Image (cartoon, rainbow, N blue to C red; front, side, top):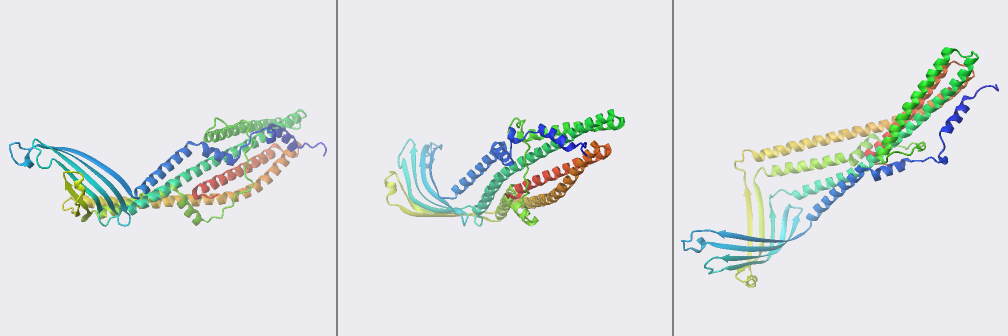
Length: 480
C-alpha cells in the first residue's frame, strides 16, 4: 500500500538527529583509558604504593641485619665511692673513678643455630682520683683480639621463624599492592559498564518517547476524522506522559553513573558531549575450573597472605614459650688476649691468653604458673589464627566459586536475551506500523513496546553482570 506509514523510518530520523556521531565532534572514552586514569589518579593507588615501599624497606633492613655487622661502641663512665675516711684501708677510702671503654666488634648471626658469633678488639682506660694517689692512679686494659659465641636460649632458633614471617609479610605486601591496583581496575570497569548501560537505557527511553510522540500526533489527526475514540486518545496521552517520566528517571540514573565515574577519575564531571561508551562485542573466554579458581584466589589474596604471616608468628610465639617453660640454658664463650698496665703502650705488650665460658641456667622454681600460662596463651592464639586462616580460605573459595558461576550463567543469559531482543524489536516495529495504519489497537502496541523494553533491560542487566563478574574474577585470581 502506497499510503502506509513506516513509523520506524520516521522515528529513526528524529532519533539520529538527537544523537550526533563521533565523527561530528563527540568525545570518546574507552575502558582501557578509564582503568589507566583510575590507577594513575586514585589516592588509594598512592597509598598502596607507599605501604608496599615501607614493607619492602622493612624487609631490606631485616635482611641487612642478618649480614655481618661492624660496630664501634664507646662507653664513658664516672663513679664516686664514698666510704669511711677514718679507716686506713685503700678500698674503703673516698675516691672517684673515670673510665672509658672502646670496643670494635664484628658480629654475625649464626642462622642455622640461633646464636651470635663475634670477633673484636677492646681497650679500657681507668683514671682514679683520690687524695693519696699512690699505687696505680691510671690503668689500661687492652684486648687486641677476642672471639666469642653467645646463645640466649639453647634449643631455640628465632632466626628461622623470623625469616618465614618476614618473607610472608613481604609477599603479602606485594599481593596487597597488586590487588589494590586490580581492585581499582575492577571498580573502574564496574562504573564504566554501569554508565554504558545507563546510556543505553536512556537511549531506549528516548526512542520510546519519540515513538509515542509520533503515535500521539497520528492519533490526534485520526481523532479529527473520528477514526480514534476520545478514550483511546487519552490512553495514548497517558502512555506518552509515562514515557516522558521514564526518560527523566533514565536521565537521572545516567547522570548519577556519570558522576560516580568522574569521581573515581578525580574529575569534576565527564564531558557533556561524551559519546556512547563502547562495550566489547566478543566476550573473553573463561577456561578455569572451580578448583583452579580457588587455588589462584588463595595465591593472589593479600588477606590470605597476611593471615598466613600472622599464623606463622603465632606458631613462633607458641614454640618460644614452650621452650621457656622448662630449664632455660644460655651460653657465652669468649677467647682472647689481654694485658693490664698503667701505660697504654705497655698494655699491648706481653699479652696473655684468656678463656671465659659461662653457662646460665634459669629454672622457674616458683613462678605461680606464669610460664605455663604464657604458653597456654600463645597456644590458644595460634589455634585462633589457624581457625581464622581456615575462615579466610573458606570465604575466598566461596567468593571465587560464586563469581565463576555468575560469569558462566550471565554468558548464557546474554545469548538467550540477544535472541529475545531481536524477536521483541521486530514485533515492536511491526506492531507500531500496524497501529499507525489501523491494523491493531493501542493495547497491542503497548504490550509489544513493554515486551521490547523488558527484553532490552534484561539484556543490559546480563551484560553488566557478565563484565562486573569478569573483572571481579580478574581481581581475585589475577588473570588477563
